[in-house]
Amino acid sequence: MSELNHEQIAQRLQHLTELSVALNGLEDTEALLERILKTAKNLTKADGGTLYRLNKDKTHLEFDIAINDTLQLHVGGSHPHAKDMRSIALFDEHGNQNLHAVVAYAANLKQSVRISNVYEADLFNFSEMRRFDELNHYRCQSLLTVPMLNHEAELIGVLQLINAIDAESNQITSFNETDQRFIEALASQAAIALSNQELIFQLENLFESLVNLINIGIDEKSPNTGRHCQHVPELTMMLADAVHRSEVKPFQHFRMTERDRRELWMAGLLHDCGKITTPVHVIEKSTKLETIFDRIHLIDARFEILRRDVEITHLKNAAQSGHDHAQAQVALQAELAQIESDRAFLKHANIGAERMSDDDQQRVQQIAQRCWIDSDGMQHHLLNAEETENLTIKGGTLTSEERKIINNHIAVTIRMLEALPWPKHLKNVPEYAGGHHERMDGKGYPRGLRGDQMSVQARIMAIADIFEALSAKDRPYKTGKTLTESLDILGKFALNGHIDPDLFQVFVKEKVYLQYAQKFMDSAQIDDVDESKIPGLQN
Image (cartoon, rainbow, N blue to C red; front, side, top):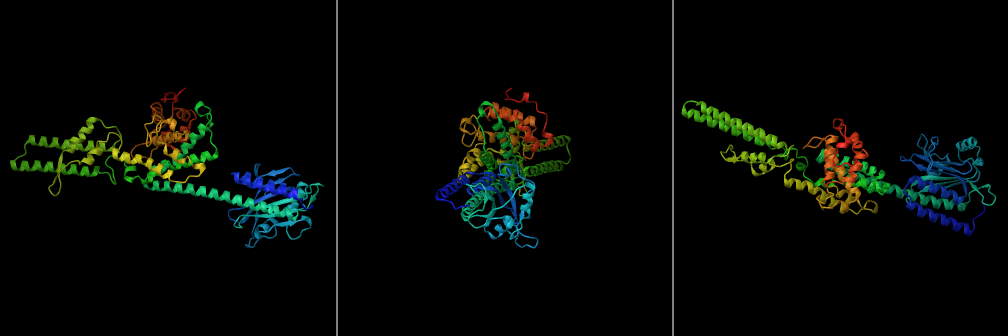
């Protein structure tokens, strides 16, 4: 091949510049590698080319892409991968460098190899190449093999070009020194681009691992909350994918790229990260009197003391009078029965599974006024003020102050996420994660946003968060609801302005609830759902 003129060199430099720009914009590794190999072929007018990449163990070069114009061959990249292409070992069974295969030679010594005629070369073992030629009625003649080294001179892969074609005669010719220098420059650019891409992937994986580390920390505090942190992202993506596929009017233009999906997934993983600051005894409060332990046992002991004192008083009175009056005995049994009734009532009230009536709250306050005497002879009310407050909780197990502590986790989540320097493709994570307790009617928290002030993604996560909480069977304060029960409650939420009614339609019509149930819910909870009876569902 004749040496290049100034115009041809300028054209090659232009190709390299264009490739450099393209490499920075390509995120798909396969597309990036294919662009590299095609550019290398175009620069040198090569008939064929192959690209190998170093495996993770750094022991073999794995075949990645092969293109040959004469054979109309294209495997790997945007085309199916070949199953019969073997990797090339960099070392023999004794651990010595493999210098017999030209690709391994270039990789091990980090040197380019240029051969004018493969069939006349005796430095390397070309038996595989000759077998390929025989099978395909082809003849490999000239060869240029270049190692791909990154900015730290680390091997990334090897680029091999076959049969340079002379532009004037259209005959096979040799690769010249200028070809080699251009391909070495291209290989260096490509290796750096691949290294940068790999670094980005590693950083993203590291970040996701750190996010999972936070969830592990929450899981250690509360295994129940930990599963919530795992399941909500899954359900969020199920619903988001259903909305992506949907053609219903509100969402006909809602589409997600892979970057959009990763952003939403990350928000799902982090949606409750603020719970890492929530006290364990509040998260895990399964009864009204539970802190580190259930204080109903202390109250139970006071009832025993109260019972003992009543019996002692009765015996003392009988001893002083000299006989046991039947009337006094009846009074004693009545008082003991009342004690047992009050004790049983408080044990039931402590569970907090049902909403408490005004009469029951009043009874707790009356019981609280009874007195007992400790071992020092000091008299106390049967319940102190804090115990009375807990036992008169209207619904659930949390006091108003404890509920504020729980609700504060979302404010902490937002503060934590907004403090991070998010890259452009993850900039919406705080908004998505921070909006799952907002409501369509603006009565949610912490910012009281209305539906039109929230993104579709945040509204999706709100539904995922509620449905997971309803159906979860591992909460310390409740049992998991069936599909029918969960959808009934969610439907009422769609009617009363709590959740997005249009998203609820997609959630049900696309059977997202069933997809989630089959993956995460107990089989006993998966009943036959009659969608016609679900509140708020449009036909």
